[in-house]
Image 1 (tube, helix red, strand yellow):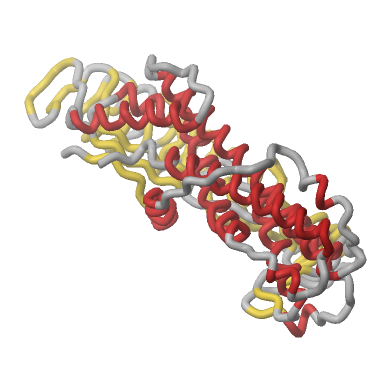
Image 2: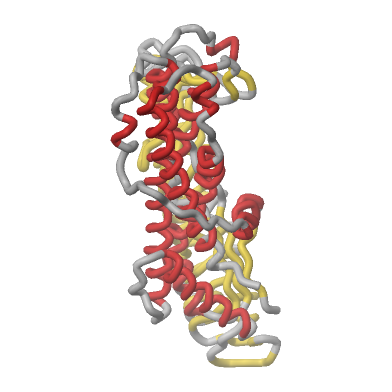
Amino acid sequence: MKTASMLGRTQRSLLGACSLTLALTVGCGGEGGPSATCNSLDTKVKAQATLRAYAEATADLRNSALEVEAKFKDACNAINADLGLDDTKDNAQEACAILRARVQEAVNAGATVQVEIDFNCQADFSVQADCEASCQVEAGCDIEASCSGGEIVVECNGQCDAQCDVTLPDFACEGSCSGSCTAEVAASCEGECTGECSAPRFEGTCEAGCTAQFVGTCEGTCEGMCNGENTSGECSGTCEGTCSGRATGTCEARCEGELTAGKCEGMCMGSCTTYADASCSGTCNGTCSYTPGEATCEGTCHGSCSSEVSPPVCTGELNCEASAECHANCDARAKANVDCPPPRATVTVEGDIALYNAIRAHIGEFGQAFNLALALKDPIAEVATKTDDAFSAIGDVGVSGAACFTSSLAAAAEAQASISVSVEASASLSVN
């Protein structure tokens, strides 16, 4: 069976975007903040303050898009290096094209390649709050009364009477973790086990092999069937039986050596990593949500905070006429500063051990770039279609405002051109 695919709802939505053609000419830009033409805007004037927020959003989105493109370049070059391919390309388009060709070659030879990546990104509401404070010049919007399809949150450094969210790479969490939670255990593990796994069954990579009812790839001696034929030796395809070397697949026995990021149906003795919105009593890489009680909440409070460090933010739609444009631009800026920790990813390759090892070694970096591209493509598309009418409807933006809008739209075009390269690169592990 010849297949190479990336599975899951979020994966399909991004790969489907690969049919978009984004041939854009960028007139100006470059990494950094908004154009100098935006510096003379009067941020005490509503229309100009809102335009400034748009300029900052387009600059942030452009910079983030370029960073994602660089992440794809590095991830594809790293996989290519492990495969003995050219790893010197200085752009994502060429580096990932080499990887895609290698995956296609494996599929043409009869291999099966499947990759699943879980989406786990969250926008930075503190950025949104600071942004909205700068463009909500007139205090004429009741945020609580005008927020729909979401909730009111506030950045906090005090007591919070509701849920507190903290987004950090390694946060000691006692709550739920949106990202990955790792804890040292000697117990059953509902996530991925790294360490020893007792019987009755495991799925993953065991360095010491498998002694009963193994199905998968064997980097040692396969006793049983290899691609449906009797064997007692090396197997370059699917081994069914026992494996005396490094075994990747399912096994109806214990892992005598170390199980790497696998599913253990017995006792896991090592570290257990759970993903998505799972309960966590360990180290959270992502966003930890918990009820702090009397403790200080140094994050996003979903209720009342005794010491707010930013104005309240509506996480849904803000229906306040001119304030709605400010909210939309600040929402785009928050999404430009999205946090995407290395996601849970499952790699299945049958019939090409070298390809499996190379992808598996770098799937964290590739998956992070994949999710960042998915998180950025919609807000980039939204700012790229903005017209100056959105700001002139609020008030006079002046001559400098017109120049600022032109340069900001060019930054949005650069972001869109860059994210289109990343969208194409995200399909490197999926071929026809």
